[in-house]
Amino acid sequence: MTEKSIELNVKRLYLPGVVLKQKCKKCGKELTMDLSVEYLSYPCTNEPFAVCFGCDSCEEENMYDYVLGLTLTGIDAQEV
Image 1 (spheres, rainbow, N blue to C red):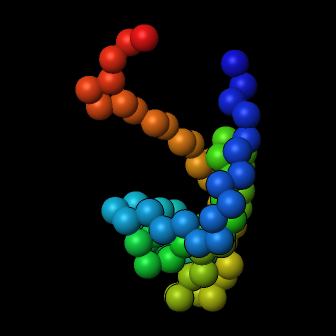
Image 2: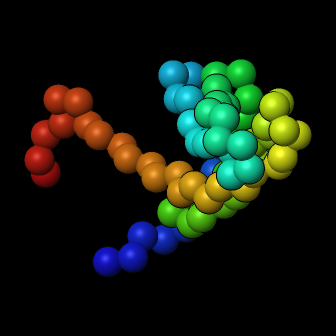
Image 3: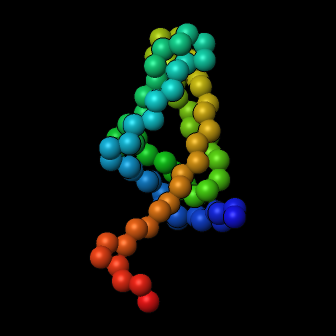
């Protein structure tokens, strides 16, 4: 089953505790993006979107694709 894309209609989505990590394609330096400080702009779930990581060492812009999944889990939920 393919999951349907959902527009979250959120201008700035911060995700405290989530840090994206990649390596620069040119020089190999580790690149990080802390989503408690930086944000995703108008994200959609279940479809790829590009995130740009700028490298301080070689000034290369690196694009990497991500998919935002969304899960809702009930706590003390009862079956109906």
